[in-house]
Image 1 (cartoon, rainbow, N blue to C red):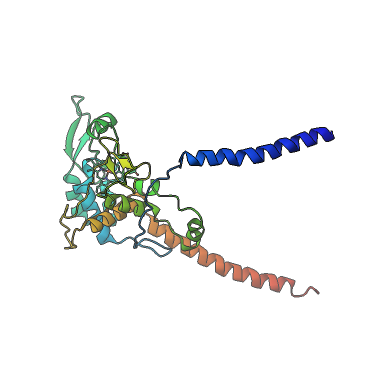
Image 2 (image 1 turned 45 degrees about the vertical axis):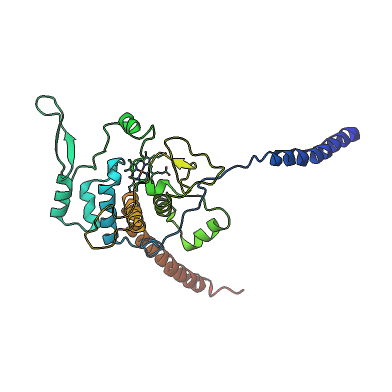
Length: 286
Ligand code: HEC
């Protein structure tokens, strides 16, 4: 028995001596794992951040304009209906007009054929492509992702210690920060060791590689804002990111209000429970 233990001990010792050597050899070969994105998202101030955050309707309307004029050429928004735009502060007539501005496929008619008609408030946003294959062909093999949930689907791992602080600061704007940074992150020259594949565009803020299949979509002055806000690239990127957050979570404001009320209720309830407990146990000798 002693021999066995001694042998195992010797083997463990030998491994402990050999393994660090092996690691050192690997490091010399410069096999570093690269983490994407190359650059962390740039944090922005959002009106909807924090426990009392609210959407800024003016900003959402501007963001919608950017989406409608630029992004909707490639990206669908399948889960948002025109009638939802009431929440952006548009009137009945304005929503009707927005919907009517799109052609929607309907049918079949009495002859069994599909037909297109102007959109109604109850319709969902039409997709720019007939199907995924068409989207792929038009975009160099990459499908532009649907926008309905993108602001919640993207985000960058924050790592220690930030994710600990996030619990207290209630940071939940990783998606819009990521989208903002991606849209404003083009234009830099890649470092020498970075190889950009053909047909892709370098962007250090892209979360899954050094480059993506989307060319820079915004340059500034891509739209003219109705409220006179200067349409800089930063402004447009921020507005469209806020709009996408709304699309992904339209009832965020209600959720936060409800959360606050529940916390308030629990605090008051806890105080009453404490008083009740004191009352119940007051006649018992300690
Ligand atoms: C010409 C077509 C085109 C336009 C216009 C366009 N995109 Fe894209 N977008 C793409 C394609 C293609 C991809 C997929 C890229 C990939 O995965 O390599 C993409 C991907 C994305 C992604 C996901 C990136 C990721 O992390 O996977 C976001 C976010 C995005 N686009 C936002 C926008 C916004 C916002 C606009 C409007 C301001 C816009 N796009 C306009 C084609 C387009």
